[in-house]
Image 1 (cartoon, rainbow, N blue to C red):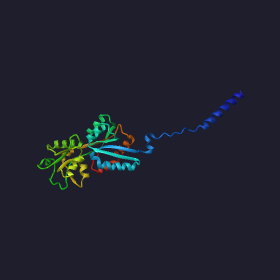
Image 2: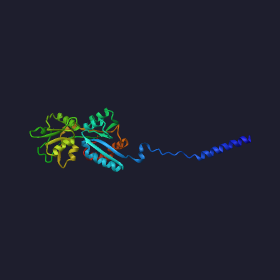
Image 3: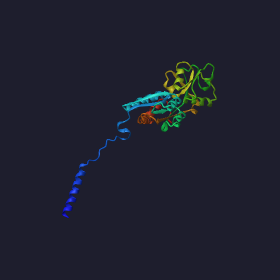
Image 4: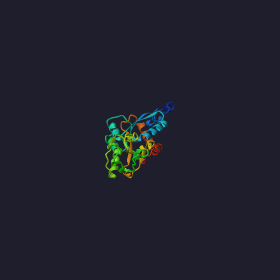
Length: 263
């Protein structure tokens, strides 16, 4: 019995010694999503043309806050951007100037999660400095000799313009239909037309060359802007970080300063 007890004691001693030599397992598993290292790489954003100035500023601010990132933009009419995305163009984020064009992308299964409305925008009549034609409202756009540029109806600014004109019971024939709001505005800046229906933010951005004439019917044609991370985003973590930045107080401040309205 003494022998058995001694053997048992030795076994326990050896076992304890073995346990003492086993250090807790070490792991080099990174934090989920690599948050400890922050986002890096290129983030490609497809955005409505009316977001140009604001998103350029937000992009620079985002890069400064996230060293190692580069934000590139593709600006165009929202309908054109939606088509490009659905045809497989590589992009991380889509920011549309209207829910209808966003729906085209999400219905095709190309959005990741639900889009978030981040701003609203309203139309004004852009005229050259000094308003030489004396435009005070939509009805003035039908006067003889007044040349007007509009966005095409499939573009959000064109759809909003049609809604406002219908509300005012004003029928006019534009001399040109443009594929995005910047193109319509440029016609005024170049002196090719006397007026164009553009967003308030675009007139404000071009205040050195044009004036924005407010009109009451614009309140019934306000566009909401949704943003979403795309399902096939090459840089999904960067895309989410950019969207979060747009929705942050810093992003909201830039958009507010540009004249966008809160959603």
